[in-house]
Length: 372
Image 1 (cartoon, rainbow, N blue to C red):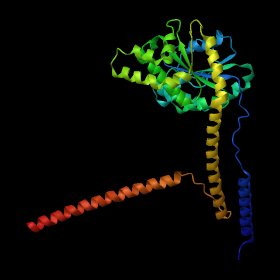
Image 2 (cartoon, rainbow, N blue to C red):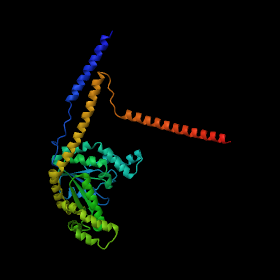
Image 3 (cartoon, one colour):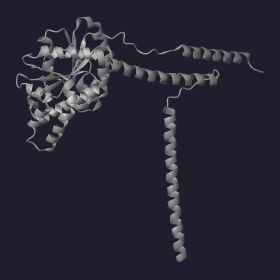
Image 4 (tube, rainbow, N blue to C red):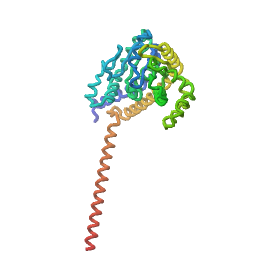
């Protein structure tokens, strides 16, 4: 005879499970909207090779151009800043402590510090959003080890976080005196082109140190590839031949890129620089934002489909269990079981090999005894 208390308990469990299934049907994750997107301030992500004086460049962007700016320092290893940073990664992450705790070298310490800072980057975006009406630009100063930011997952997260909320422009700072060599110039252009591909954001070339060397030669090389080829015609090395070929390949890149010559020491050229920034910000709103929204919608759709499949599987498990306990599979159990099976299989194979080898030895010994 069934216990009435036990049967009533099962009915309650089944009823609760049906309620949960009904709530899952009503659960819907709506795609993100761009209603919180702000047209101001413009985010300027400054990247450049070590020695291009990005720090002084940022300082004069604010002080000499008389713009309402906000500065974000993302270099945890810099000892001192020649300008005041409104948000500084060093206030949150201690670079030397990270190196010591995780037993890392300099580059690994910078990378890990950026990773730790990125976990709280939503707070940075929120701070800027609150001050959006009071700002024209936000200058983001990245580490001098350019590849650490440009080619890391953390750099992509930070870039996308800004680009999904504000108009975002990347500025690649070129050391003009060092780029008078055609080979060095081509190296910088290839790097700038790769950053454009990686970030998929508008790019401005800022030829810095124009107080030391005029950047007109670079503009001429970009406009007329024949002038560039004539410059390296006397050099028959492989790198020069390659640079000669690349000058033709990069013609489309040169034709659509904006540039400005600036001086971090005197502040010259800042008006032209900000005109290029404003033009790129408008281009961002017309072209890049639509592409970003499309990629974001596709990503959210894939995520929603994945969640829908998980919920459907959970619903079926709950219905089949009839009020029993449902074990959520994370994949770890199956993985451990598979590894255990593989280990057992390897042990069996090893045992079989040993057995076969022992049998072969015994058979040989038997043959020898028969010959004797």
